[in-house]
Image 1 (tube, rainbow, N blue to C red):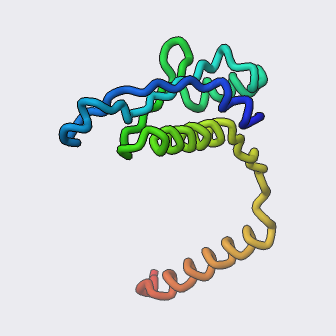
Image 2 (image 1 turned 30 degrees about the horizontal axis):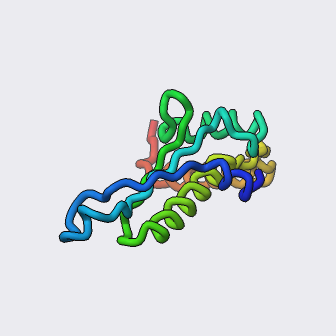
Length: 134
């Protein structure tokens, strides 16, 4: 995964932000909308694309486009930085492959100890019973 190449494939669009902001909000487009076409990406290999499709399916549109937006700050530049960082985090988490768990055997000493403890508890409980006088 080449980060610089991926960032060059991103498309940004500035939109007027919603919510409170006074008179300035009607003039300035500070909200940033990032879109990334997963299928058209040249920076990712086919295996990486497939991995991302399975891991971040909920975030992708039906055309496999990832859309993120940010209107946290009043500055368009800061919003662009924030949304780019958020995008890179999503891609890194989507490409993460967890280690395969190796099944291990229970050691014989542990099995012996468990059986010994069970016999000990059984003997203690038997000693609590009333004697059988038959």
